[in-house]
Length: 114
Image 1: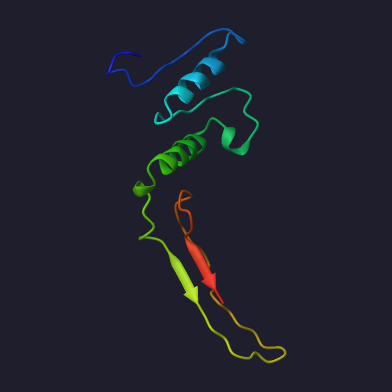
Image 2: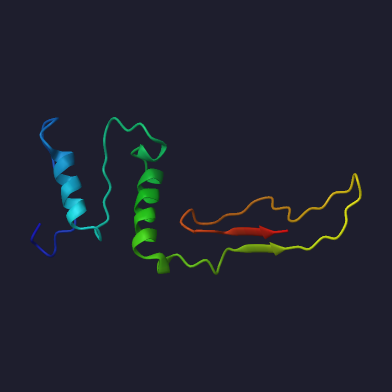
């Protein structure tokens, strides 16, 4: 791990040997390092070992460490509307959005004020 050209670590051992504890300690000692743990017994939605889980977990870490990488200038919808009176069975639609494709790492992609 002291080698500057070493970018990946594969740690193997018998169950209960302390692999997860060691890697958690290593990750805690180096908060700027991205990390991804793979376990056979994943039980949470983000815990599967598929590519989606990997990309989301790494993306969330990048968004937390480098928020400037995730600019919101490309996808943002803002609606500001002022409505006077609406009759008894009247209806006001602030915005009708069929579909928005936005990065899950944005803080906010949609804002409606009425």
